[in-house]
Length: 126
Image 1 (cartoon, one colour):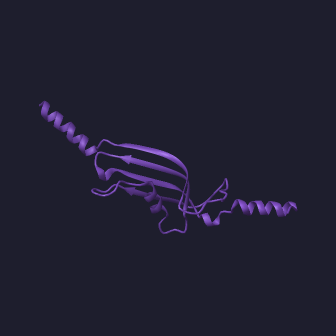
Image 2: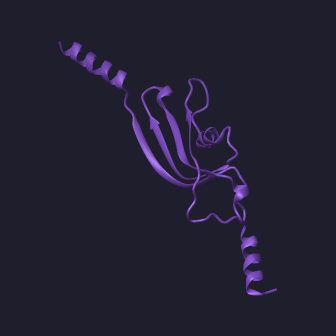
Image 3: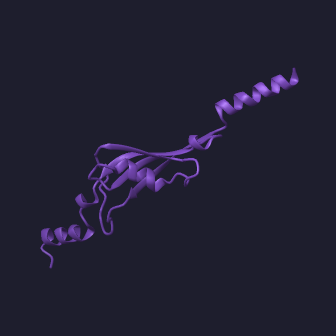
């Protein structure tokens, strides 16, 4: 009887899996050129979501691949105020990373040089 009870518990653990899930907030992830760019306080844009999952015999999951999958098929290259969720389980196929956040294009952001020139011209400076 003890062996059957232990075997039943072991099978339950295998089917349910021993996993862990963690969610973090990340401020900015980008593949665009953000050098000298100013990101405004209030940004509105579409919410995009992407995932990357472990595959048996392949590389593990990557945050960069999840971001690429989120931006795939769009004109955006940056995600701000992202929520990153990782989940690990007993089986390799149950390990994944998920990214969800507001998308924007770095080309649409103004640079700090543009801001400085605009301030100089409006104040009459040289």
